[in-house]
Structure formats: structure tokens, C-alpha cells
Image 1: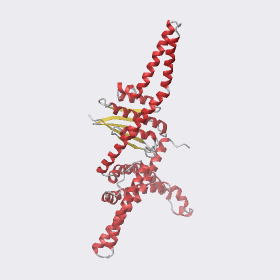
Image 2: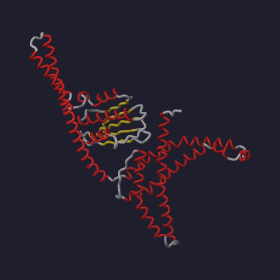
Image 3: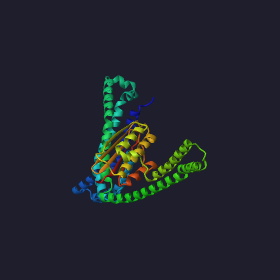
Image 4: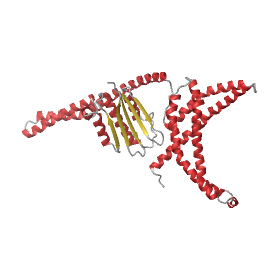
Length: 404
């Protein structure tokens, strides 16, 4: 029996969400339990009933403070492995913020996670009551008249709970993914310092990549097509000089071929000066992307909102980002049936979003094509983000500055 792709994706997402919540519940509830124990120790100190309570409280506070970075690392790994969200490591900096998150917000998230996982287990147990009831002795069923009706009610209730759990799990996962990165990530000053370092590295990588590409094009032109055209032009010129007994019509054909060969050599040389589609210069980014969408091997829904022409460098980067992204979707996105491309100018930022409905699992750190895209985007001080959790969808977001 073949599972429909839509149901299969839904099951994969449910498995991902419940695994994420099941792993987060013990991490969050650990600090909640520790906080509860510390409140009990404080009460013991106030009541004066236990002389060892201050020592135990001090030890618990030190142990909880030391464990905060380890819990933060565990949360970062959970987000990265299951949701594809990379939270910048704060290290040992801002320990009080980490401690506050684990003890306060983390306790709330732990309760929501435990509730969701508990509802899932209860729903499965209730839905399977008609199966489990026959594991009881036969005399129990004969002694309890009406158990079939109660079993039916429990099964229906379990199925209702199972229908609600996927939406509840997705909502809790979405709430955590929008809240936790800002609480456990780096501060603004650390982000700025890291941004300067990333920009320096990306600029150097872009210059190196452009220089390597230029050398490759020059080598290919010199050793390949250009040599063939030069040889052809020499042979045609030699034919013009040595074949003096040709008819005027034949000499006219040789002259035209000679001129065409020299023009082709000039056109190949011009490719080094500008290697991008002519429609991008003539009609702009909208027309160029429309051509890409029309040639793509899968349906592409394109939305472009550009009230004005942009800088040539920004248009070129946006074009090649969409081109490479659509190529990657066609080659690597499993079970992808369509792609959505949105290009919009928001103030002084050009936002390009490419999404597909495949099974996800893409990793920008492992793909050479994605690495090249990151370098190209950062060469104009842009920002590149990708979210591709297992089960999909894959969303690539690029923001390019467009100062007026």
C-alpha cells in the first residue's frame, strides 16, 4: 500500500514536532523542578525548621548556574537537528539571561510540551481501547455489561484528541521557534561583531571566486572555442589570398564567412566583460525572472513587486540566486511539485524568497551550490537564510540592500 505524498508529509511533520517536544520537555522541566525545590528550601530557611537548608540551597544555586550553558547547548542542538534553526551560541556570556530563560520561560514551554505529548499518548491509548479490551479475561467482559458502549465513547474521544494534537504540536513548535532564538542567542553587540567578521570573510571569498571564474573563462576561451574560431578565420583568410580563380559568388561567400568568424571571436571576448542575460539589462529583473520561471522543469509561481529599476549588481545577484535555487529544487528537492518565488522591494531592502513543497533536509553547509549562493549574496552585504527541516517545506530567504 502506497501512502499518498500529502499524508506522508503530514506524518513526517507530526513525527518531527512530537520528537522536538518530547526532547524539550525533560530539559525544560528539569529546571522547573530545580526551581520548585529551591522555593521549598527558601521556605525551610524562613520557617527555621532545617539548619542545613542554606547550604543545600547554595549548592543547588551553583549547580543550576553551572548547568545553564549545558542546557542552552542542548536546546541549540535540538533546534538545529529537528527544525533546522541555528541559534548563535552565547557561550558563558549573559548567564543570568540563560538562567532566567530556563527557570521561567522554559518551565512554561516544558508544561506545554508535556501536555501535548501526554495528549498524544492518551489519544492513542483511548483510540486502541477496543483492541486492548480483549486482552482482559473473558469473565470480566461478561460481568461488565455495557462496556462496549463505554469503549466506543473512549475510542471516539481518542480519535478527536488525535485529530487536534498535530495542530497543537505545530502551534507549540512555532511559538518556541519564534521566541527561543532571541532569548538564547547572542546579544546585539556580539551579533554586530560577528557580522563584521562574516562580511570580511565573505567579501574575500567573493573576490577570490570572481577572480577564479574570470581565469577559468579566459582559459576556456583560449583553449577551446576561441582557438577553433581563430583557426577557422586563418583558413578562410588563406583561402581568400590563395584561391584567385574563384567566381565572384564563391569569393563573396568566403568573405562573409571570414567576417562572421572574426565577429564570433569578438563576441566570445565580450563574454568576459559581462556574463549575464541581455534581458536583465534591457527589460529588468521582472522580465528576466519570468524567463527563468517559464524554462523551469516544474511549475513556478512568480510574484514580483518592483516599482523601479535596481542597481545592476543587485539585479544580477537576485537573478542568479533565483536561477540556482530553481536548479537545486529541480535536482535535489524530493517530491517537490511546485516552487514559489517572491521578489519585493521593502523600503531599501530587496527581499527574495524561494520556497518549495518538498521533503526538506537541505543543508547550506554541505552543498557547494548553496555555498556559492551565500558568497554571492554576501558580496553585496546581503543576508542569506535557509530553513529546511525534515518533512519540509524548504524556504530560502535573501535580503539585498538597495540604498536610494
